[in-house]
Amino acid sequence: MPDRHTLEETERAMKDHVGALPLDFAAANALSNLFRAANAVRSELTNRVLRQHDMTWTGFVVLWVVWIWDGMETRHVAESADISKATLTGVVKTLEARGLIAREGDDNDRRLVRLRLTPEGVSLMEKLYPDFNAVESEIIGKLSERKVSTFTKTLRDVVNAVEAQDEDDDAS
Amino acid sequence: MPDRHTLEETERAMKDHVGALPLDFAAANALSNLFRAANAVRSELTNRVLRQHDMTWTGFVVLWVVWIWDGMETRHVAESADISKATLTGVVKTLEARGLIAREGDDNDRRLVRLRLTPEGVSLMEKLYPDFNAVESEIIGKLSERKVSTFTKTLRDVVNAVEAQDEDDDAS
DNA sequence: CGGAAAATGTTTGGTTCCGAACGATCCGGC
DNA sequence: GCCGGATCGTTCGGAACCAAACATTTTCCG
Image (tube, rainbow over all chains, first blue to last red; front, side):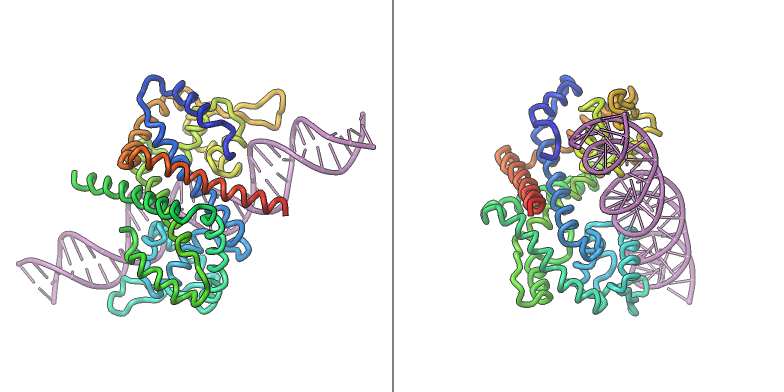
């Protein structure tokens, strides 16, 4: 157990602090577990797979995106990796210094920068990704196929709920 | 859609790169959506609730834990907030400088440091948390009660799967 | 008692992280 | 052509993030 208190204890302690206000405890509990799960999986994969290759989580994600979509423009890489353009600039600088990735200008539109893996980057990913996916499979494999499907669908529902809300904000 | 490619396109592109190796695509997809959902919810809550109070995600989480469990020792706060002790030291320094939290030594064991909210910290949380929970409720509220329950349970399963794996590693 | 081992929070060094401001480039209408 | 607005990647400043090394304090055991 990651925390030292049961759900019931936490719920009681919360009620003591917020008083009579109506709270959606189920929502808080669901999202709390969402973050806990994401953190747990992320550190498991970092410690068991990425660390041996001196690779950070974000560095790996960026490498993976560029591996799959060779020559992708930076802003799309940032979007796919779920990080800001500013963060990507720094991460690419790190990966470039290690000889794993290369920046490449676009002649038609000179504002653009395209990213490609170097041969070293490719061979690292060919070695690294199967290990990475094996651990992913090990973690998820304890759930039934049906549960995985439902789980994935609900996660997408959550993403869609957030994005729909953002669009409402834009319109108002 | 956060990325520019469909699941099918991505799957095909992956297979082109990993070749004949057997991959657990369902696991990769499930976990990819886990991170996407966690990131989406986190930035939504940060932008819509925390930003107005100039509060970071981690700062809020630490404040919340200490609010609920007054006088908790730092290592337990770090564990509950899912951050390292080193990170907590820095975050507490920031919150302390803003007069929201206070550090307090323990006379019985002088290695320990206990954390408490200042009156300003308490009044901030009393104002902030209901707003925070309202947005949480808005996001999760689009799912049926039954779905939320299943979802939460599966998230816990994932956490347990990771922790069980860690214990196996310890034993070996 | 006394000294080795364990536990606690902090410091150090280096990366990630983001919003905002910025220069460079492209596109639109005139 | 040309200039005002949009778009692109980078820079800047400040915070978060962690592993490893560290100093301090406590505990354990002979």
